[in-house]
Length: 404
Image (cartoon, rainbow, N blue to C red):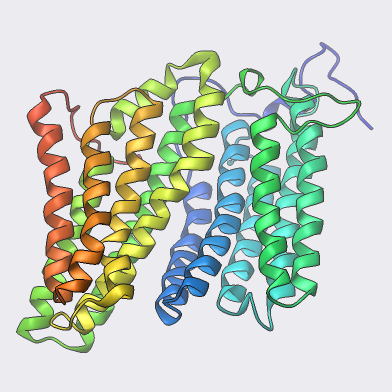
């Protein structure tokens, strides 16, 4: 094996990202993201077709595994330069594996469980091994990757074992994959003889991670609009158009809540210094999938709105129509809390109110459209509270295009 470079530095310095402020998102990274437009669509359709506790649980497991693939690839791109040929080739292979993962998603708990698991393991292990090779000789970061690859190999193997067994054992094993990974990340991937990794040694560029996660939020919101738009094309009457406008307004409200202060978040993480690794681990690995889940659930509620706006909402409908925005606001409130930004109380109160409205809407047999309108009104109050506080930051333009 090749040792450190002649000057004691990285063996492959040309593969590492330079540190010149917030590193821009490259076209290679954006191309990788395109797969997840399809993936999120697959997830929302999966939940919509099995709107039960079992379906919700399985959707959560699939989202957890998919998020691990995406976020760890984003972390790799935080250290490695996506425009260098070996890195670009690896990212394209990861993109292919992620596409296979998305294609197998609808039957991941059925006939294609093994394909889903093998694709997951191949992407996770392959990308991590390549990253370990690419950053060799980089102080501290190399040690972190050596520890990480042991854990990733273990969880990848566990995922394949899950693909070999039937439900409900498959669900239990894949939940264990997510739990083990979360535990490893939280504890620094400890390995006997190698010690553990600490976030202060990760040399994180927090602004880049913030921008990448903003892009995924846009992907999830775009999928919601895609669902409502495709449903609208099937029936262009006044009722459906009105329902579409209501669903669109809900997507705008979620977008506004997140992106109104996104620029301040990026600036805070970019200036976090040694704290950037610890903060990024918490807000991106743990809190962002909660917000994404909220958007996916809300999209399922929007689909019900367009199909039957006047029908009583029922328990399943109330849980997606009111519970989706509640989940998103709870996740975003925690996000604001960790970063010590204002607006936490408004988001917590709004999430609790939406949850409290669920049994009320069911008991009163509230129409789906009225329940969606209530969720929109509650979310709008959060936007109003941010505006009234006088402490909001200028609206972010969102992730920067590599062409700008």
